[in-house]
Image (cartoon, rainbow over all chains, first blue to last red; front, side):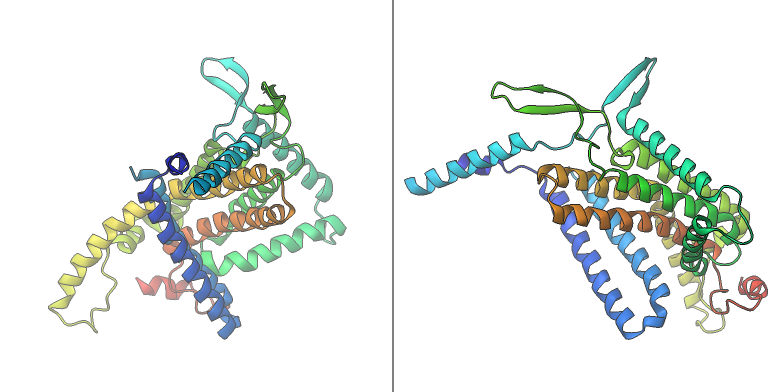
Length: 69
Length: 293
């Protein structure tokens, strides 16, 4: 059993950061889809807001992936 | 206990076997020709040039001489441009739109075709390698590698986008508006209490520095986002033996990442250049925009 556990490698700090980014992007996507369902006419503006939010959330995930030691 | 040990050791052996069978794509592009003096031609660069040549010849051949009454091929490209214009114009704003639109269309088509070129048969699977003791073939130097699966090329794309962003905001917004947009106090002086206004100024100043930092890491995040998605997709496809479901997912990811890269470039320009004139598209909104600041 122990050799298998020893083979699991990686960086917990960047994994947690990426998990947070993934959750954030998922929440933004859900809300964007919901709000387009409520008001299809505003889909263009909602898309922009959603893209900005996703970019910010994802940017932190990328920083965690590359800068975490 | 011994049963569990046996089970886990067999699982470990299985995972080792699969990892030997389907090893990952190397994160670096492999060098095809070494020209000396640090100049190298990698497989990724070569694919990028080839696909660019294909795109250029295809569009030149399809459109030839643009006519007022478009032929079949020309009307296809015109409808693509119309769709993109309707998407980008409200984001960028009327003022900077003519300058930024050609760049956005070029980025979109280029990244889209380069992403999808990674899904062609033979890309990343034909190349030099060696045969190990058990007779398995290991590919070490593929001849063809998708352009956007190389970090250097996505950095180049992001730097182009960022440089154009700087030029366009300085031309269409001007240094004064940029500084006000970053550090200035956006609170309405009539509606905020007098004692609050200086405090708000300080808050906006600090927020401005955070904003400058987040702008300065934009080329990095843009390039890593594109590279990570395409390279991860390549790894996924190679690891699963080009399973059809993942292949379809990679088609979608290629389209979405091209859209995201282009939309983000548009949004970055629009955040600074698009002030006030997004409420009334049809009226001449320049007066409003000028009165706004």
